[in-house]
Image (cartoon, rainbow, N blue to C red):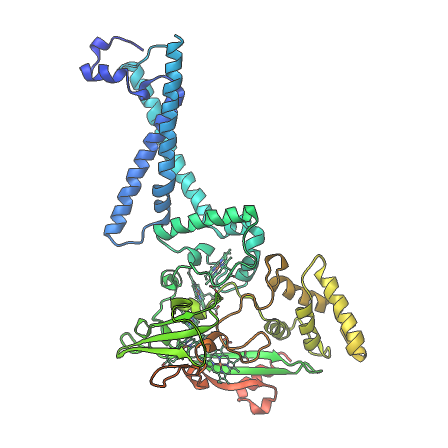
Length: 497
Ligand code: HEC
Ligand code: HEC
Ligand code: HEC
Ligand code: HEC
Ligand code: HEC
């Protein structure tokens, strides 16, 4: 600490700086501010170089680099500068009160070097801490854990359904955000808005689907699923249970022509014909759930075909246009809510419910429609079943009672994983588009039949096909008689009986 400015190694330059650079003032607030700003500037430069580098190589920009560059580091820099200013003010005050020591430290002097070493050391530690903590923290906000813990009540239904799906090991963000800085920042900003809505308790229940700002499937699903993969045909067999006294087993079986590209360059076939960019289909729906589709445009090598919904009145510019992608059919790839019928069919197939309790399928279905999960769902189900059997099927009450605790448990579990009263979610709130049945398992204008209903007609009289064989070859439809089935389907029907 010396004021011998005449011998400053940097000459006049050093003398001038010695009095001015707040960095050299000896308050710790300024020192801390300097450390933070140096770290911020260094990391900003590094992140910028990385961004430019990735950009030049046309590589997807790492999401963390994006946020760190655009949000965290500038904030850090501002904090550092504010601290420096604050330190300077404090120092000035001390000087005016005559409390401060020497105003400046000689650049290049011993004290300068000592301070520079301390600052350098702190910068180094800070860089390591900031980059690893920052990375970890942002990694955590990317995790399924975070989504589920921060918004437990809001996200519970989606989380419960997700954890039972084929995608249970795929992080929420891989579908909801995907790679790249731009969407990451968008998502974090809308995430902040969502957290605010949760705090204010002002979010909508149920959370609306479709998610209108969901990123295009091209940039999420297609990172894992190769869109031009050829899937061939797929045998689908679904066991059902009919609502008669015997809970008769039946089976629907069909060969689904999933298709895709048989070879590069060859026209795609089957259901995944839609995924071939050469067959782009775009549509206009006039309701928020995209259920009512009034206009469809199909791109073909010869030009576009425009199909209009017949016999309906609607405005020319009403509604929302969308290019069809994976999510228009696979809208429930992971948040799969069951229909009551499906849930019961699966429970019978898995052996959780026994067909030898007469009328069980029918009464269980009523229980699912009439009850909601609550504090003691099992007891509520148990009461409902007992009362209904006593009233409608008194002769079979004893058969029910023999297995009542198990049956009530199974039905309660189905209610609890599909119905969430606090979030306004009940049967059909989030229906799947992968098919054409309604909640009762009857044919309906849903899913594929929103377009494939032969009601969407072009000027030349072309319509979007409802030919049963276009999508699948039907082997059986809720068939109960084994003799009417191909042998291997009959074997499947009797399996485990
Ligand atoms: C395999 C991809 C995928 C994963 C993984 C995924 N989601 Fe989704 N999620 C979707 C799709 C697709 C939709 C939109 C459905 C639609 O538009 O009809 C959606 C919709 C939602 C909705 C809106 C309500 C609804 O059910 O439509 C919420 C909330 C949600 N997801 C939360 C989550 C949470 C929380 C996780 C992680 C536990 C998660 N998602 C994981 C694909 C995914
Ligand atoms: C991070 C990778 C990843 C992403 C992103 C992803 N998937 Fe998957 N998907 C998988 C894996 C792995 C499986 C196979 C899981 C299994 O069979 O257990 C799978 C299976 C599937 C299946 C067949 C299984 C079933 O449920 O019948 C469909 C359909 C599917 N994905 C659609 C989608 C759609 C639509 C999206 C985008 C919304 C998507 N996937 C996003 C990895 C991914
Ligand atoms: C026109 C509707 C439609 C579109 C668009 C669509 N799919 Fe499918 N996809 C289906 C149907 C129908 C099936 C068979 C249903 C089943 O397995 O129950 C299927 C099956 C699949 C399977 C399972 C195949 C198997 O062999 O089990 C995967 C994976 C899949 N689709 C992924 C995708 C991806 C990724 C996209 C977007 C690039 C996409 N699909 C677009 C309707 C569609
Ligand atoms: C938004 C409207 C729309 C929806 C929804 C839709 N399609 Fe299509 N689909 C079309 C149009 C348009 C065509 C071309 C006209 C035609 O072949 O009838 C087509 C053609 C097809 C074809 C014939 C492909 C070929 O080889 O020529 C199949 C198979 C098909 N769709 C299956 C499905 C399935 C399965 C679903 C439901 C999971 C579905 N589509 C949902 C509009 C739609
Ligand atoms: C545009 C494509 C398409 C057309 C046209 C179509 N289906 Fe389907 N069908 C599907 C899809 C997709 C599923 C769902 C498969 C699944 O459950 O995974 C399905 C499922 C079914 C099932 C099984 C339901 C079950 O769970 O038991 C039956 C039965 C069926 N279709 C009958 C028909 C009949 C009859 C026609 C003709 C009037 C027809 N379909 C026309 C696409 C189509």
